[in-house]
Amino acid sequence: MIASWKIWFGLMSICLLQCRVVSQKVQLEPLNSTVLRDSDVQFMATIQGAWDVTNWGVGGIQVLTIVNSTSSIIPSADRFSARFCFSTSRNCVEFTIHNVSRADAGEVVCNVQGHQPVTAQLYVQESGTVNIPGGNVTVMQDGEVELECFTTAWFPAPSISWTQNGQAVNISLYNTTSTPDGDYFNSTSTVRLTASRNARVECLASLSTLTAPQSSSVYIEIVPKPPDWTVLIAVVLSFGSCGLLVFVILVIMICYKHRKEKKRNYQDEMRRVRMHSQLSVINTAEQVRGQINENYEPENQRNDTIDWTESGFLKHRHMTFV
Image (tube, rainbow, N blue to C red):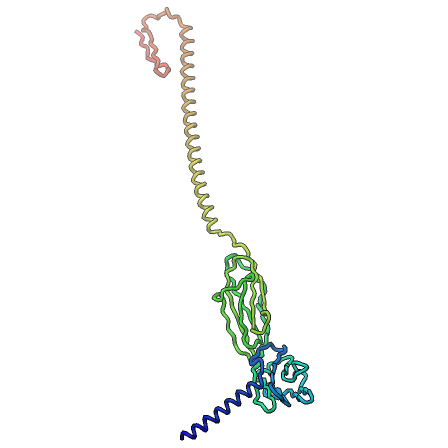
């Protein structure tokens, strides 16, 4: 039993040593690569020691063969090419995939004859369209505006963000959902903003392979708020009520003053008429007295006494004859 374990352990040690040697003889870089569709991608294999033939496979299909003895490179299509890294050495080979498609995603295998294959992983991304429908927006100052951004035919689903006048919008102000559509993803992002000033709002969709995000933008134009007629009406009514009250008071005062003056004028007129009447009676009495002989007294007749009232009118008394 102990001998069996020793044999098994020895075999495993030999296997691990051989595997380590193999991995050291063929190195592939990079082991993971992510590129955008229609771009080019390179993989570089470094081979230690002598070798005869190297095969390259993409997506499970052998696409290129290199024969070291004749320096022959045989591609299966124009999209695949290879070259030696150094003109004086055959220990480094650069393999290129041109115009990468989604079908190229997966394993890229470098198989050096006599060695274990070495595998790298290729990821292919694809950008689609970005659109904010509806065009520019007009909104009242401090009003709320809601915008939607749609991305179509992306792989994988893009990362979406918003900016306002070049400043990043807080992530709490928008939400994004993505749904698969065949081999692609479509996304919808909705943002709610308070419009305090004119602004350029931009929706940005990005992938790790894009040098710059794709974007769509609209302009938000602010219009002034209409006047608050309720407040204005209240102010007008308030001032109107005060004005009306003042007007009524003035009218009352004017009427009172006019009435008082009229009454005073009436009293003055009555006094003037009364004085005129008194003066007329006095003048008449004096005229009569001047025509009568004061020394003449009729017989059997008592003197007629004329009394004057306090107001100046004559007060007649009856005369009695004897």
